[in-house]
Image (tube, rainbow, N blue to C red; front, side, top):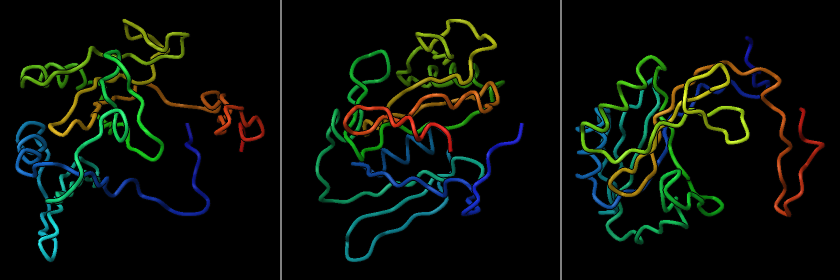
Amino acid sequence: MTRPQNKEFEFLGVNHLALVCKDMAKTVEFYRDVLGMPLIKTIDLPGGMGQHFFFDVGNGDSIAFFWFPDAPNAAPGVAAPENLPTRGNIRSAHGSMNHIAINVAADKFDEYYEKLKAKGIDVTNIFNHDNSDTQMSKEITRDVFVRSVYFFDPDGICLELAAWTSEFDESDVRHAPVRADGKPAEDMLRS
C-alpha cells in the first residue's frame, strides 16, 4: 500500500514531545531505568529556571521533560486524563496532551506487556482495537488494526504501548470531523 504523501513539507516524524515533570530524578528512574529509554541529552536551563532532559524512544524520536522548580501542580482530569481507559474518565481539556503512544513491533507486544507487569507497573488489560461497534476484540482478528496497553508514569502522564497490526487504505477514512458546535463537517471528509 502506498501511504498518502505530504505535498507541502518533507516531515521526518516527531523530533520530540516536551512534557513537564515534578521530579526529574524520578522521571529518569522511570524512563531510563524501568522502560530502558537511553537518556541522550541533559540541559540545566539558564538562571536556575530548571532542567530539560531527552530520552530516546527509537527511530530518532525523543520524549523530553522540563522540570521547573516553581511549576503549578498537576491537574488530572483537566490537563491530562484522570484515569486509564476502562477505569473511568479519560477526557482532558482542549489543548492538553491526552497520552503518548509508543510504537512497538507486533511480534513483541505480548512479551512487553508481561515485562511491564513484571516490573510492577499497573497496566490495563490488552486492548485489541477493531472496527466493530464496541471497537474492541478479545481475540486478535483480521479486523484488529492496533493492539494497546495503557499505564501512568510517576507524574500521571498516560503512556501507551501500541503495535500496528494492519495497513490502512482509503476505506479507513470514513468519519467526518465534528466542529465545536457538535455538527459534522461533511465537506471535509475527503481531501
